[in-house]
Length: 195
Image 1 (cartoon, rainbow, N blue to C red):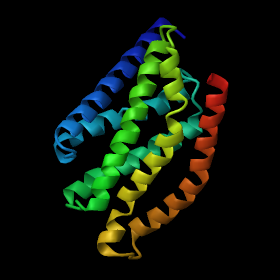
Image 2 (image 1 turned 45 degrees about the vertical axis):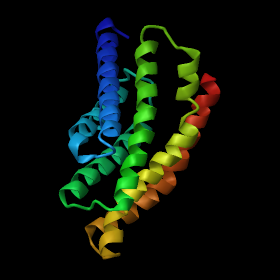
Image 3 (image 1 turned 135 degrees about the vertical axis):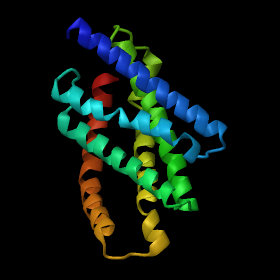
Image 4 (image 1 turned 90 degrees about the vertical axis):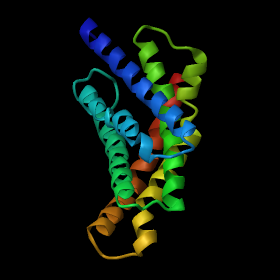
C-alpha cells in the first residue's frame, strides 16, 4: 500500500470515527431526539459509500459483494429514516428502531474505525481486536432488528397495501434472508481467523 493511500485511509477512518462519536454523544445528550442530529447520522453512515470504492480499488481486503450489500442495506434504512421523519412517522416502533440502529451501528463503527485506524500504523490493541470480532455477535442481529422496525413502520401506520414500497420490502426480506446468514457466517470466520 502506498503512503498516500495509507494516509488517506487513516484520515477517512479518523473522520468516520469522529462523526459516529459526535452523532452518538449528541443523540444521547438530546434524550434520543433523532431529528436534531439527523445530519450527523447521514454524514457518519453516508461516508460508508466510500468503502465500496476502497474495496473495488483493493485498498482494503474487504470483499466487494459483502461490502456493497452491507452499505446498501444501511443506506436504504438511512433514506427511510430521513423520509419517515419528513412524513412524521414518529411512532414508538420507529423511535425504537432508530435507538437500536443508532447504538448497534454506532458502537460497531466506533470499534471498527478505531481498529482500522490503528492497524494502519501497525497497532492492534488486543481489547479492541476482541471487541471488533466479538461485539458483532449481539450487535449485528440487534442492528438488523432495528433496521426492520424502521422498515415496517409504514406498514404499521397504513396497513399492508400493494404498492412500490411493499414490493421493495418483499425483495428486501428475500435479500436479508440470504445475506444476513452469509455476512454473519463471514464475521464468524473472521473472528476465528483474527482471534
